Length: 245
Image (tube, rainbow, N blue to C red):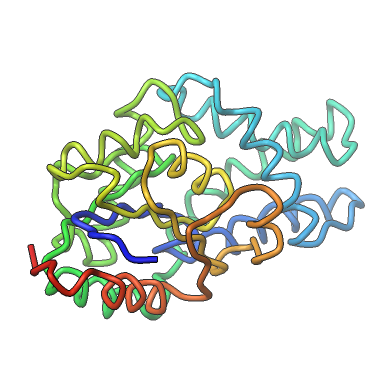
């Protein structure tokens, strides 16, 4: 399959930032302290279900949304209300420090440089807050690769993924049509949103979702084990008569 890609929109956590394993490690530690043995794979299955629950949540809830996420994880694993509250407050108190320590994936800067030099417009659609997104991109020194208008957070939409609103807005702000673009993410909720937006989608197994799970929950255009491999495929499959933008 070939397509003429004008813009590439990325998810942030688990796609550019190796934050999902760090986040899940925090949750697993909290559960184990309360006598529950939860592997990353089991927790990821729960996470996929929870993301479906949150698709109708108001996007500007901020800390309330995160509180609900931890609370529901605790309850899904059978914690009593009292223990679930303790688990939730414990995770909230550590989440900022844990997230701040999450590194870029090793191939991110190389890949963004390649795509930027090839003339693609680059944007982001993330469930993170706008402050969190901007701070993260600046801290890792990659913000200059992106079209500043194409940085879409949960604060910029009324409905979050898997609703396509944010992805459509990112393409619009990058002056591109979804049919000439691609959305890259590490979770089924990302792929579902991208498919609903009418763009090509790439699922990355860099987070906690493997190829089998992608195919079970959604149908990406392609699946890769690294951002670098995804970018190489995008560049190589661009029609030969499509010049750099």
